[in-house]
Amino acid sequence: MKIKILVLLLVSHAIIGFVGFAAGIYALPILIAPDSPDAAEINAMSATAEFKASFKKDLQDSDFLHQGEGEVTVGSDVITFTGQISPGPDYKLYLSPSFVETEAEFKRLKATMVVIGDIKTFDNFVVPVGKDVNVGQYNTVIVWCESFGQFITAAQYQ
Image (cartoon, rainbow, N blue to C red; front, side, top):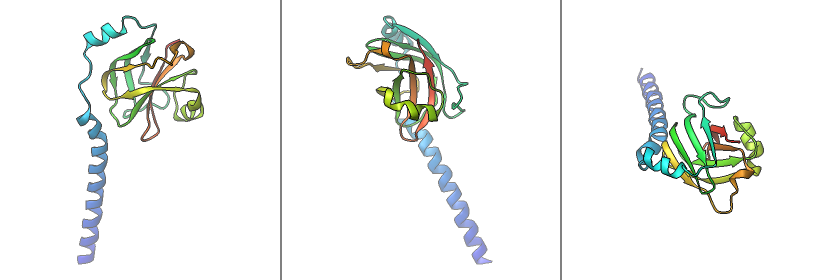
């Protein structure tokens, strides 16, 4: 009888520990995220954008934990986003010469892409574009989670 209770306690504690760990991985990026830029700041920065596109929830590899929805603008000096992306760690913004909507496509074409920078906020963001990047050579902006190799969202802007 004592062995059954001990096993039950060990299993139940392991399950609770796993659930707590998973909740922590999800919640930590939200807790440490800086304040998002406000709409006025994004409007001012996106005024000179050359391209506009939309992140949509219904892409092939997007799901309820990995998605984005809103408007993205692409300019030669800054990329802005107004909307929401699902929170997560280590998000990167990429430009790609081809539209992708799956992890497999992303991994296959990653060598042809350029990393623009880190995404630190999940409600609106502004990411500066390096002087050596010609946004006209690409047609798609992608949000990718480096830590877990997870596709989040993409938008074709030309």
